[in-house]
Image (cartoon, helix red, strand yellow):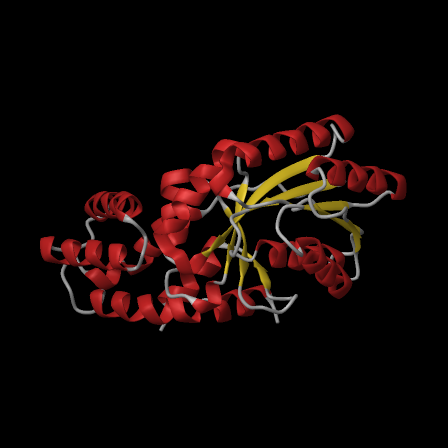
Length: 299
């Protein structure tokens, strides 16, 4: 299944919740105050959040005025273009060796995302090693081991309660010795003890910077798309700790709240890099802004 098909299929529920609203809104309407009020309501009810909805609406109004557009059907593509631009970021292509630290609260599918990433890079012909640096959660290492076997990649893990930074050190040492292309680091997600988590992640960062100063190092947070706007508080909390580079938005196939992509972009200015669209190891799609908008707009 290609990129467009996989992402589009995963957005089925979001599309069902949004497409009909936009279709009826842009059919046989004049661009008057009532239309703009209705558009704002549609944007907010589609889980874009107030800030993102207002930003998109204001730009849409200004450009409709500048272009002297008076009919709603003539402005549909303009709105799509504005929405695409609001979530489209220039993300630098990966360079190798590559290190990706994956963070997120427990229960969002973080370890599953690491397993899917392993398969994603292996399918691209890259060698991969995973570091089980979540040594706090019971059986986290065993869970990651299952995913490493499914993906056919190596796993470095220590006993439960071990120092996460020591796990990462061993994984990086192994990667350097074997010339491995990608190191994926699974981390703990217990925000209720933020100080401990901050200390752990700080130590991991120091180990990465010391041992692999020339590597391409990225930090991603995994979010559960079904939580909608509540995901923003998680981004804020982790961004303070690890300076998040991008988002892996999980469980998109199980929610109609795909509009949270806009809220994240408006309030945190962070790109969505991958979208989880199912439970299988191949159910990870690269995020594309145009594909996303086309998928949810078309009936």
